[in-house]
Length: 472
Image (cartoon, rainbow, N blue to C red; front, side, top):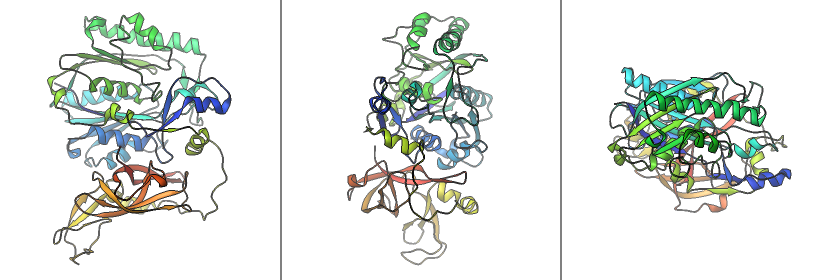
């Protein structure tokens, strides 16, 4: 049996009300809000967070591959999947790949992972979808697009949702696209791309799956069908014969927005959160074609370890009512730079030498006295022992703030920047930046966890490291 053995998600803490966007331009507001990345988040950091959620209860060293689906990789020529795999501490032998340039990338990657596990070339593969797409100012896409990531672990043992069938078609069609020079998504005329592209293609794929396996719409407890906007999905659902009230999974548009490649995987994760043994789930993607996938929920769904998932991240949020802050965080306007000396470009040799310490956030633990230290040392700061250390992972440790300060001079997109000294559970202290928290909200004793974030981008290099954040 091959299928999904775990799932996870990540939704940024911050939400921007669509009313705030409309107010900035004097336009009509769509209902709800959208999830937006903090200034130090991007596709990679969200993929890491979703991967951590998905791997809860699993040993990362037992994962044989990581497939990253995205249309917004931070690099045009460099594999972002290797950064995610490094931060998740996957084994060096893990197979990594980017599935890019298509909104259908998540299901394409999922099918590839299923094939790899079924053939025996891999025991388990982590499929992560993450996107931070942007629509041009004043347009509908600016209100519709939201940020988010979702992940599923594919394997053959303890399967919670067996892959029972699929039906795929491709369609060469211009609806939404970007060139290498474009920052914002382009689109064709609304009615044409919805009727001739989305509606026709998704209906053909789902109808093809039903016919191929001799099933009816009533065979499914939940259907997670891709939707390009807030209006178009109901017509597809009705034409296919599904009950919109009882069967169709929420698109999450009102609370998150359209999360790009992560959209269908996010809906699938949400469906699995409430799934029961024996139920069937259908997931249908769209983008230059469509993949319709059928899953059968197994009794092992009841054994899934607790995770934040879609529900957990939806329940934890902070509303941003300032459109100007969103513009600043996304770098959408040229602002006067801070009057500080220009910092240095990240050292490529240093990153190469210390990548396990940087990406995996590994410290050491003294074999003589048990003192945990970061960064790794040769001489123990407590007992003076030399070269007597075991590696000690800190990325998965929680801690408490011992003391803190706020830096008004630190070159960041949203000053003042809070820094804190934190004592980790199990030992060790580290001084680092606190994210997703205003300086006035920090207090001594505040529980924190680690979060993989973007520290800076300079000369085409994105520098990533771990920061503290309040436990969500």
